[in-house]
Length: 260
Image: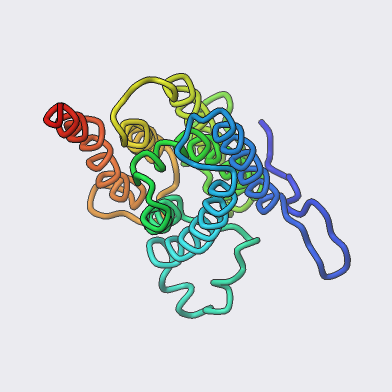
């Protein structure tokens, strides 16, 4: 059985430390940048190359600021109330997916309004890279040895010293990396179909919420809300919004038909 002993620090130069967690997010942003530029060049998304550069800036701010505030407010408010300076220590880990997603939605909505772009079309354009980017983030969690799972006897169990014991546990962060990669692959295959705006991002919301809810059963919960974990509770509204986006009628088609 393997004991987690990975060094979270990739490069150490005196007091300067570059952590693998941060590198994973940089790789995610680079992947998104290349993907979006490629799609823009092919005319597959409602963005010019200049729009991609601007949108990426908004996205980075949304992921980092929203993700960090979400982690602070949703998961460890009392700890950060006692250690407020650590709120800014993003490089140590601790970015909430749901918080980052909420901030990205708000920022993208503002960006779409300013550029005169359909918000749902913009969201669909980012669906594939955002799904795959989660894989990078979860790999960063794995290297940090955090977000580990519950005690188990499965053959692939691992020991995570950060848990404070030497008991075998589910490598739940790897499960999350895996399902995010699969979801990203599904969206990639569907990305060019003729569908109503919002379908792709809605499908991502639904698939992520379902997968996250399942994995939460084997992941050590941050805290419980009745019988559900915090992650499951936050995934419920995400699933509902996704379901609405997938099932809603395409009102733009009706408008076009009426004009004819």
